[in-house]
Image (cartoon, rainbow, N blue to C red; front, side, top):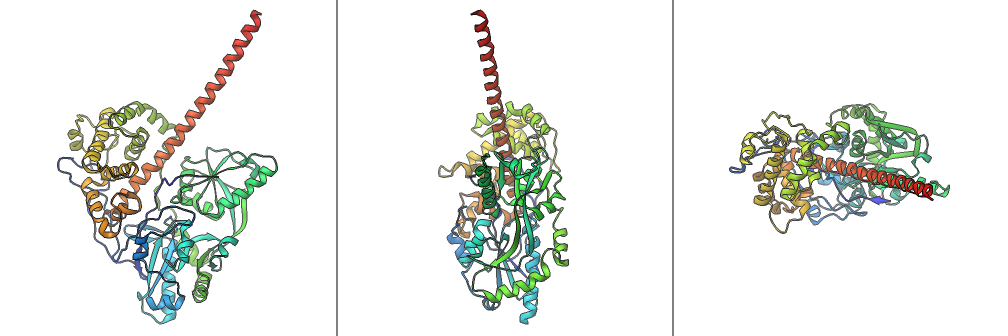
Length: 536
């Protein structure tokens, strides 16, 4: 099995919300297209956003088989392991949940998603049964990676896992599961529209199949792969995605044609196929059948388990509440596009030489600059934003002039000016020798989008919040989320997705070129051999 390095972040933040919802937060003004300030005055512009009152922040843990919570998380979230009586006594319930649509996400500063609404309703029911007033019980959502949920639960950093866990014997030996929210779950193969359609598991032999890290899919697919090997077939190339990349994100990438195929729950694939037309479901290619999806609590928390079971009976898939929530939370996401489809590949080839030249001149990775270009303008040199930014790199005319660009609609000039501006940001704001290059890159991108002055303030404030000013993901990005909303996070994230897509496509092109050259060389050798034989 291959495990890829962490490429994409989740948005890590702990949201304190009352059972009735979030209080209003301060609005951060600024247009949505927040890419370019003038260097000489370093003014700032960023997407508007708001955060609920009472927000607490915690840094993301490093991905690992048994993720160890960082000290800052322990400081900000008290450790409790008590049952329902303790939850009611302290008047807050801590819910461990992956940050992934439609389960849980932040929208305009508010916690949204199926888990957010279900636990809001559950808090209402607890208040009613305990004789509390509305809003007396607070729900604390603690976003975490899927593979961190059970360890954090057992460590006392949460009271319940609402991550849609598949019940497995290994997990059941460590936690107590509620009655299933979803029953008879099949794990099936989902492919992109361009990938060959498998008719049976045998068709996966020798193929690459992606799965979410920490999911039951990986173990089940490995078992099927071993069965294929025992029959003399090639094993499945099982690729565990970065732990920060959810099944929903993988489905989005398959829909866009970036990934060829994955394994996920059939009900989840069916839901997302309504909104992602690029998905092809193969319900006859079953990796595992008869699964159950449930919430989890610590062993020994019997009263909390009993209370949740009573609520699950009202909320599981197929009930009125469950069906209403599933319908509500589909169709509201903007999806990434495929940067290496035919049109995208043609545009990249058209501008690749100029991108390489500009990137090489200033010491940048040209593929990442290409990914940024696609994020900014979809490689359209005539693109214009509502904020007045234009061209491939979406520069404001004032910034373009400062960077020596006379015509920002000229693709070569726009590229040179945009890369020169990034070099200026790097040298004036992020030249610290102690910065790791990957962090320097992320901070430069965030500054290109939100403004260097803002990023500087976030970094200056980070130590007082227990965050690392030299790390974007899980640290400085949390202050960005609190200050201006999700725009800078989405900007950096999407460029990373497009960078992965371009890298995969270029790797494939190199392999195809190698194979073509090998075939041509064999052909030439046969021709030479035939000629020598004729002379003899």
